[in-house]
Length: 75
Image (cartoon, rainbow, N blue to C red; front, top):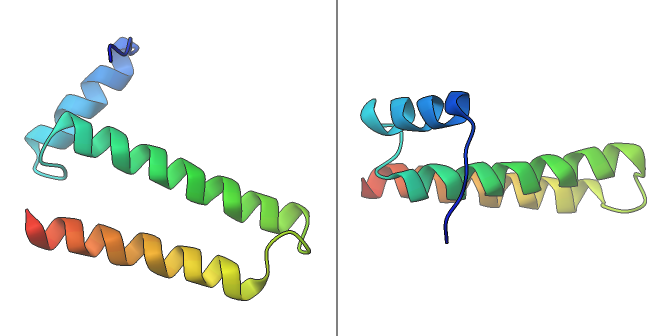
């Protein structure tokens, strides 16, 4: 898959990988996509509390941060 990025986004991506925050460009993009999905869940839960329960939001956050911690320890 080819992805066209703005120069600013490409610079950010390179800086993140070079500084060691991510092992590869793919890892950084994958993390960003997951973070975006998590943010959308949080916004949806704020906009309509009936859509996601507090427990579901907490479970999503716990899963996200646990996966991130596992990714960092594997690097």
